[in-house]
Picture 1 (spheres, helix red, strand yellow):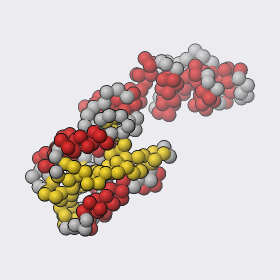
Picture 2 (cartoon, rainbow, N blue to C red):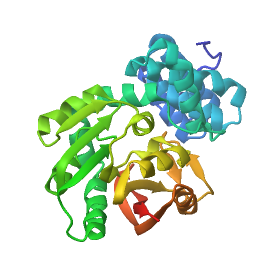
Picture 3 (tube, rainbow, N blue to C red):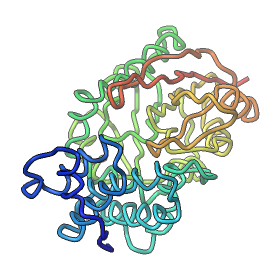
Length: 320
């Protein structure tokens, strides 16, 4: 990290800040940036990163300053550096890091996204988060997607039980206790072995296996009365293949139930959260192409993010 020739402490003092010589660089940067002194704030952050190269917060703030001051050519390599650190922290295998960095870049910059998230990213992310996943979702994120989806499923089933149920992207099995009363047999699939270990502890699944859900659906021969995907399609942009394969695995009268985050642009969009949002018209188009029709379809709050509600669509499909 190249140091800046600007004396940011002198700039603090010139603006009337006493004791600038004792101010840590990160705090100095915050003060200077709040005073709209971007070059001095940048100098403080570069000093901090010289002293502590692993300070991700300082790097993020520096990236923001470069972006807001129109210095994209300087921002881009630092942004890539930040994404590479994230890959390293998550334990993404080195061979897959470039594709994960490209995915995170697309999420942050709004450039053309891939059709789906990287399996390496999803696996690493949830292996790391598995131990704290439930507490984080239920507490800080006020996660209610399983309950919202199961309300819709029960309405569509009209009292039917003793079903063969497949939980796609089952994670730690938060939906498992809600699905169990409906199920003769309950199976779960997930990419993350860490999440599957937590799901197994619940003792409600008849079978759990690690796998990528599109591939698993394509290779399977078993039919299911109910297939659910709670908060899973946020890691898929294009839905055509997934819907077509899910439709082929439905028994006569079977249901495919899922949630998506609401998109306002046509098709799908990779959001800064690194999760996809889908326009409802696109979801309907994919369903129609797969020979499916909606029996339940409504908006609801699925969780919260940064203190704001995340609005999504709760959808239950069946064969046409």
